[in-house]
Image (cartoon, rainbow, N blue to C red; front, side, top):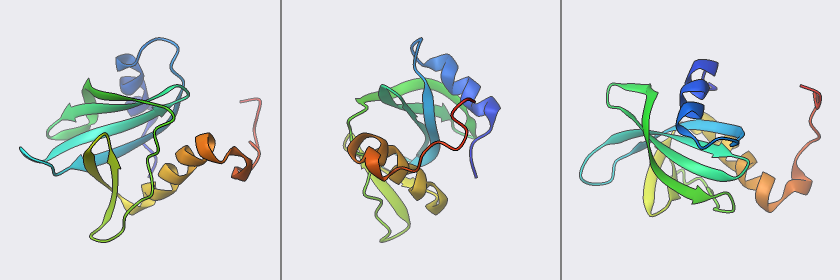
Length: 122
């Protein structure tokens, strides 16, 4: 399920001016020292990993990490659930967000495979 407009607005408030949000996906990191919930925000220029409140994954609190937009998110590993690796961290994602990861990677690494925007004026 896509994140709500309210969550996207909270994410936008933590980003540098001029960043255009393309995709947002919730992710769970089970790396040490413990479990943490993040929002991965893909913009036109960067990839941001935003920390969230522990009991409210829809409330980003700070920028945990920033990566260049040319950083590959996939492939999605499906061994024990859906997971991606980003910046040395492994993030578990809901299977429904695998398509988001593939689309974000395709924008940068294979734009010819994307369908045309059906509503380019919006």
